[in-house]
Length: 66
Image (cartoon, rainbow, N blue to C red; front, side):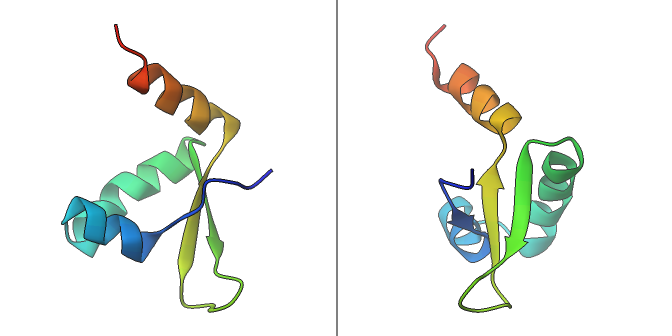
């Protein structure tokens, strides 16, 4: 199930980093199965990012106070 969509452009704005910096990390997250990247439904130029179940687990683990 694809929920919790984040567009790459929004992520770049939030993190205030370059596309090149994000691309390195994003490729690793996609390759290791934490993130799925799909083409935008309304605009094919947009790239939408969705967490996988594995990605959600990691996010919850990182957000949980230790």
